[in-house]
Image 1 (cartoon, chains in turn red, yellow, orange):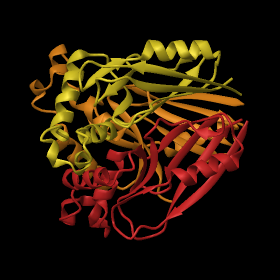
Image 2 (spheres, rainbow over the protein chains, first blue to last red):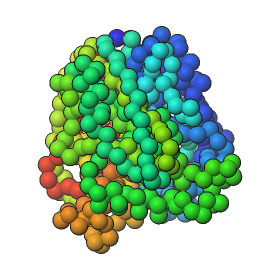
Image 3 (cartoon, one colour):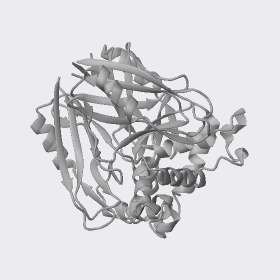
Image 4 (cartoon, helix red, strand yellow):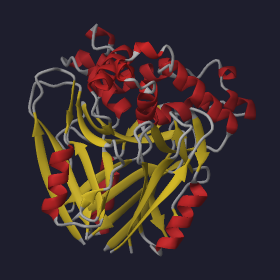
Length: 139
Length: 139
Length: 139
């Protein structure tokens, strides 16, 4: 069994943002030399998500608007977490809705995806450097 | 290390539907010959989910009703994704709430489940053929 | 390839509760002897979650309050699942929002975590004994 590990770094200019990281993850699979296995991709932070969906600008707008309605950032005083001096309680909630991680099949040395599947880094408390972990095991 | 891959196909008659796919996935585990490992089950589409919960008709009704309230299909004009000519923005949202994939332990050649755990294909934009990927690694 | 399996048991005094199980899972990784691999942690029940987030009391209060608003327990008659004699339809919904399982990278014999990542057992229908499965594969 082989294993591979890499950290990818991101820094978004907005509080909430979605970045297509599929090319970086595919490059990890290639670099790993693993032909058959599983790839785990997760943020190493708890106010961000990694998820799989469509690379379509309108949909990302819809996600952002819907998440903001479901767990509004303001007023920050509505969350007890923010009593600690933070203002990101909403980001901890949004990350749970969108999920933490994805596990993707690796087949013939590639991400085993349907036509429209793309991997996104979902940031809900951005404007600072954050890491995504890629761990691949297989043969 | 062994690896196994299979595609399962589904076509629901309704826009939203939940199908118990546990027997098909268990058959994959048997066919794989893998005794100890991990099984990944995910739709290869981005308007569907694979999730684990109860095979109870009332609960599925509750899920459908609750999801429709949380992310209504209509009016379709409320979503910017639908400006592309699609009408399924709500399905992309519902899939995120219910999750993309499940990873299940394989122990002694079987899905390692509690009493009530069953695997479902959750369709949110049906009435066409769609695939679920089963990837199993282990020994 | 090595594999490891353990069940952890929990019994919460409240209907909804969040328990930090990181030390127990880390002990499993150590006991497994696995240095590089993947750890799957999931409840064997369908009204509970395993998720990764912050060990901060205010945030847990915010999660509980937000989930109760999103999928209220009462009135229990609003859910068709509860026609079966159950009163836990809301718990089946809350578990989907928070997710079933986590998959965590194991690197150098440890859970490969960012600074604030902690694993929680999330109970939404407690006051009875329930199990969490830890399955680790790797080398």
